[in-house]
Amino acid sequence: MGKVYLIGVGPYDEELITLKALKALEKCNVVLYDRLVNKNILNFLKDDCKIFFCGKESGCHYKTQDEINDMLVKFAKKGDIVGRIKGGDPYVFGRGGEEALRLKEENIEFEVIPGISSAIAALNYAGVPITHRGISQSFHVFTGHSANALSYDWKVISKLNGTLVFLMGLENIEYIIKNLLKHGINPLTLCAVISKGTSARQKVVVSEVANIIDKLKEEKLSSPALIVIGEVVNLREKLNWFEKKPLFGKKICITRPKGQNEELKQKFLELGAEVVETHVLKIKSLEENLKNYIEDLKKADYVLFTSVNAVNIFFNYLVKLRFDIRNIKAIFACIGEKTEKELIKRGIVPEIVPEQFIAEDLYEKLSHRIKEKDLVIIPRSLNARPFLKEALEGKCKVIEIPIYKVEEIYSHNIPLDDIDYFTFTSPSIVRTFIKNYGKDYLMGKKVVAIGPITSNELLNNGIPNYVAEKYTIQGIVEKILKLEGYDV
Image 1: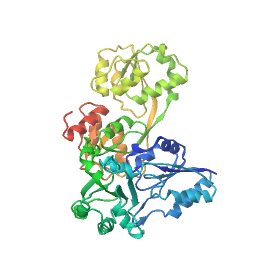
Image 2: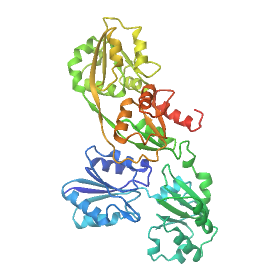
Image 3: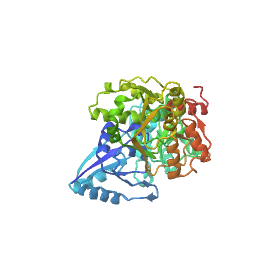
Image 4: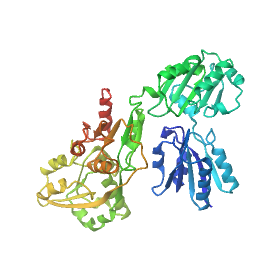
């Protein structure tokens, strides 16, 4: 028998997932996820994890609840570690209790991992604290989805002093508001409707309870949405921190290989953007190729690195061989700030780092120094541009060692229709993205390239683009901020 984790991952913002949930996801080899789950959560899974979409929305069930329960039982009885990923918290109108009871009936081990409910997080991101001293000492959470089918005592609800929250209430808002007004709620009480809370597409409409329906007719909101009623809504103007971030409302697609997105992703998230990840490439180590060149390394005059991947694979393999780095007497050179920082972490300060982070500029720096008898070693990607090796071969002896290769992969059903910016950091990523997704997603959108080589690949495919002024991750971020009108 396997085990099932019923995992709440929060309302949308992927960073609201808990450490406990992350640790559980890392164990899973089968996962079932819901429609409202941010698909970036799937990036935390093992590469060989089987993933099943079990989305449900009003009027359209991809999987019924009974079918989902059956799947959980089936996989657990096969011995799988199963993750049932649910938006928000599994027990807050999430039917997690029904799933847990079915597992109990089948004598299957399960664990329920709480998640942050949208009743808390979406209000927070809209600048509305669910309680506040002197204003609201309690809160009351209802399902709005089936409000018209439930026997709510509207007379009691209308007289409650605390904050009222109706989850999934947009479809039934007229019924909810009508009953609250009918049974005595103060019509001047403030009401906020929060659509797609904690996401880049978050939208908030505020009005008095008596006027909220008319206000909503002016503003088109879409599900998921919740309704919050109470004097705490007055605090939105002062506490609205999320929507004031520089890139709030922007959805940015990052196309870097899995495991290399984190720095760029974090910069965008801190600025308020929503990040969509498409991993079109992955890095496969070919470290064993180094074994045949250990003696050459001892004789090398120069060792050149053109990527962070090369640095990490190179030095990790030498550690595995217990090779003493002091045996390398060569001058080290590299391209890019990140590559330089990675070398410095290994205790090596590169002597040559070109100002422009391209192979042509590195060659320009080297061409004035190298001699015909010099041995230059370049550990790099099997798929790398041949320019550097070809340019140096006429001036010295060159050994190029392919220590990794870039392989194509296809990301899980990533929604790309409403992206504001696409970012690209290499020509190979451009080619693979177009191969997997086509060019249509990029046309008419703002596309940002890390440098001229990547930009030219985009232009060769008929895709206009902007080029970062500094050919770095930070350069991409600054370019987008400038395009949004910020002085960087």
